[in-house]
Amino acid sequence: MLLRIDNLSVSIDNKKILNDYNLEIKEGEVHVIMGPNGSGKSTLSKAIMGDTRYTVTSGNIYFNGKKLNDLKTDERARLGIFLAMQNPMEIEGVSNADFLRTAVSIKNDGKLNLYEFAKNLEKSYSNLDMDKKMIHRSLNVGFSGGERKKNEIAQMLLLEPKLIILDEIDSGLDVDSLKIVSDNINKYKKENPKTGLLIITHHQRLLDHINPDFVHIMTCGKIAKTGDRKLALELESHGFNIINAKNEQNNIKEESSNE
Amino acid sequence: MNKIEVVSNNLILNDAGDIISTYVNNDILTIDCKSDIKLIFINNIYKDVVINVLDNVALNILEIKKEDSLDSNYKYILNENSKVIINKFYYSGEYSENVNIDLNGYNSDATFNLSVASFGNQKYNINIYHNNKKTISNVFNHGITFGDSVIDFIINGTVKKGMNDSILNQDNKIMIMGNGKSSIEPNLFIEDDVIEARHGASIGKFSEEELFYLETRGISREIGYELLIKGFLLNHLIIEDDVLEELEGIVCSLRR
Image 1 (cartoon, rainbow over the protein chains, first blue to last red):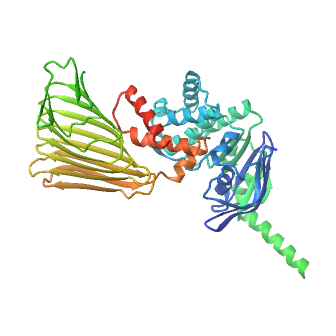
Image 2 (cartoon, each protein chain N blue to C red):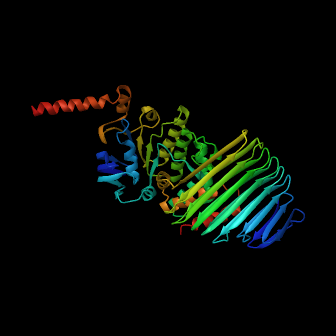
Image 3 (cartoon, rainbow over the protein chains, first blue to last red):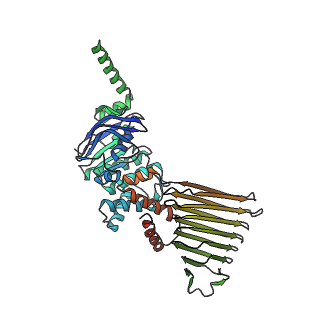
């Protein structure tokens, strides 16, 4: 099992966001999380990465059998978990090249072939149709929304993770950029078939490009329904009423049995 | 470009020839720059330094101060069409410095980039006088305080009546790594109506969001701080690669 989340509850500022959450991702699987705003999708990604602003009140997270709860964020990342963020940070003064050189060097236990690194970096920028001059600019500073998302994927390609979490990677991307980003993710996945993907999105249009094994719909900090790609299409057509209808049916059943 | 170095109190002249003249009178070091030149000050111990930039001269200054230094006063006098770029990198304890930049000549242009890593109480009083028309000043001060250390930046930009079409930019930032209370006073005293002026000041800490972002790429908090400090102190300096490399080494050792 690549990722296993057991009965995870997470709070921020004493407000419970994830509630007894469970999820399992096997090697090579593509899971999609959809859900209304505030349902806890991004909190899930931050909790997996160990963001200290989120408090795990109960439950466990395992990656390749190793318990993550007590590991720091950078330790989790070095195990091979990569989070492509919804809003990638702008960091003035820290160049993309310097930042990535540091990250790749740490990943390789301090060893770095500068020529290989520069070649790979340029190649990833080229594959993502990004201007190579951006390599030497401050991290995400002055980048458009789409460029920032592409920059996340460039980082992903260089860091070669085993589990990729894409938090709304499709927001801010135009049609062409979405295809470029998806093609790069698919190519990476093809070359690294054991890599797992956890995609958080509001729209099924990303799934036109990346084929999911499972689609989960989250509400109120829990998975309310799981299906395949058809579930995403159903959601696109009918909205979150499909969950509400299911809940109402359950309530009716419960009331009948009580009577 | 010709180069002159001032290491402690020794002048090292490299083919300076007629390009500059230097003299010391009453412990005041005066340098007249007559042609384009680069000046390097390493641990300058002259209390008073006057640099006079003659008409049409481009001057580039790099100053590095390590460890504790005596308080200093600098005066830069710019004449017609002269241009000065001043880059200063200091890391030290107790220190104070007064800087006067006199933009006396028409179309004179000064850029002042200061980076400070402070381990004591430090005060910088920077005065820019736009004494002629179409003069430009760009002042960028970045300071980091460690432990209980303090930095006070006081920046006064003055434009007299009639000195129209001048441009003033000020950007001042202090990052606090400890508990000291620092301050910034960014002042603009403008008597003319046809002026372009901006000033900004911020004091704060590196954000948790920035550190988290770096950590998600496998970079530890310690190395993340190093990257942020390096970017903050060095990015705005206009310096050559070999100097940058030397300063990067210094910055990486600051928190150890």
